[in-house]
Image (cartoon, rainbow, N blue to C red; front, side, top):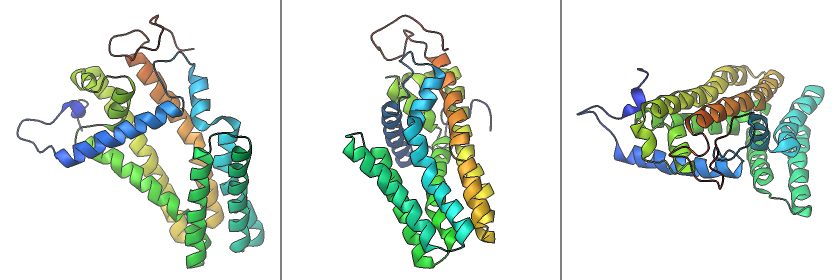
Length: 258
């Protein structure tokens, strides 16, 4: 695919309106979620701060890692199904209750609890421990497919999200540098979800529960964090604070990322 593949449809080529509209809506939703997570290029935050904020800090890291880790460890020791699921789900419930009691936002913890509960329900229904990871496969497939479709309709999702964040929705598509950057960033994010499926599905089919759980943890935050950092640095290079097309954050002085 050529470097400038995201420049827009060639004359006479198909450009499905429904797919483009769906990708734009998804981009707006992703941009809104990114802002809530602290990914706002108009701010002067350092790369480390943004990545840490995107992961939710120590609490977010623990909420993401501990339920899966508990399942893998407990299953490896007991070779049973019910106890590992109960331990994993119990940890997710505790995190949600702690947020409720401390009057902290519960969205992330509640989302993790729901995902853990769905995964446990599938495994209990089939009676197979490896099916605890089926829901994660579905999520990776969904996000990967949406990102891929956005590339195919020449509306790279990262560009749509950043354009929404920076009030540059129409402008970025007219800038070749931005188009190329957002195209390749979207390719990288698509590759992340594809890589997870390529590595993890064979382990699922082989019934290698411990190996699958371990690989899933290793391909989670350890890959997510560097990709957030790369995306942040690329977007900050395109939108220095105070530059044209960047959302006004109250301080127009350009900043150099630390």
